[in-house]
Image (tube, rainbow, N blue to C red):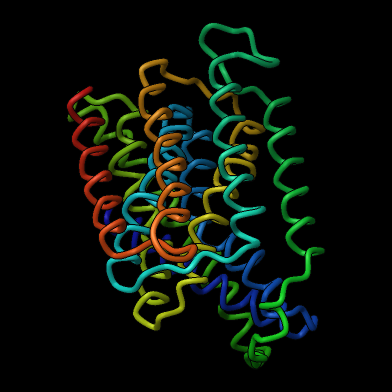
Length: 311
């Protein structure tokens, strides 16, 4: 399983590098590349694990993986990043990305609890709801790409890799993602059986923590370089992609069951979103300070303890 996570992270990195090189050759701006290719790339481990799990008859991992990953993104990744360097939050994130992230969490909570199309007591997110999620995801991407921001003019131009290295990066990335997805999905089922834990709990804790490593590494590196915009943009973009795109694709493969006990974790995710917004507007300026980052990090420790204690 550890080897699978390593293959997923390295594969996603290689694939993003290759795709970014193609984006540069297509004359896409660095901002658009970051908001589309890189944001999707950091969500690839969640995507691949969910696809393999759904295809192999273990869809219980899917929703738990996303709830756990999104909670980790806000509480742990933003928290650690803010401890390293206080995070300045841009106006566009406050006006667009934070509200969309909150809306995405609300949508999946309503879908999982049968407020929309699915009325099956066991199956809670069906293929029709998956299409709705994907449409919302594409609408967000279109809004992101079309909305010009002042930051777009200040970004430095990037250079594309040679074609040979670009193609090699894409191929190695695809192979790494395939092998990683196979290893993680297979061994997550074995762990769930051997430890007497539900697939949802395994997805919520072990799998979610590991698949969020790309976001964690990206944000920590950005924070050490005092580039707080990338840190929070990476987290917000990944959370939105996880719900709209990753769960949307997963629901198209097979209907996704939802354990009602996980509503408590969903409430924690809502609370994490609200806490993040409160921290942005408290104190001096629109930023998350070091002490607020410490509180977020401690909140993630509490979330993990609560999730395991419920099992």
